[in-house]
Image (cartoon, rainbow, N blue to C red; front, side, top):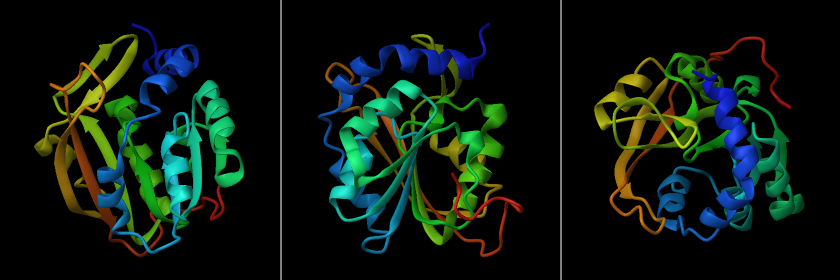
Length: 214
């Protein structure tokens, strides 16, 4: 079996243009609104797994200060072309996240679903550490159960119960949890599980990391 992270990145590097065309026009306004209601106007957002920059651009156009990153070099290249100077973008993996209490919002739209279950605890701790106390974290997964391969990529699906259990060790409280249909043509029967969590802990949960990050 191939390394799941390497294989998934190879898929996105190879199919970045097609992925951008498929997802560029999706209207995620209802998701944005349920997330942004928890943020101060003009707050700072980290788009973790920003893909081709669709959401970075949407948040920047709404007046937020946006930092985005993705582990796929091809995705970051397309994102930079799309977003320009309206957001700061980095080519880096989740494991390199080192910000400390630097963001009011954390956006993980269909990105954490590629993190192997064995690596999720470390990745999630790094991401939560990047949030300021009271900051909001949006994440989404395909509704289902367990790890599996699809089209050369690793997916980790969740039910409401399994997602709650996965987040239980973290210093967050769940503020909103709902399901929504897939907006892509031909996938109307697929559902997404969406969640907004609020960071509750005031002390550092990842000592020794940089406040500024990359």
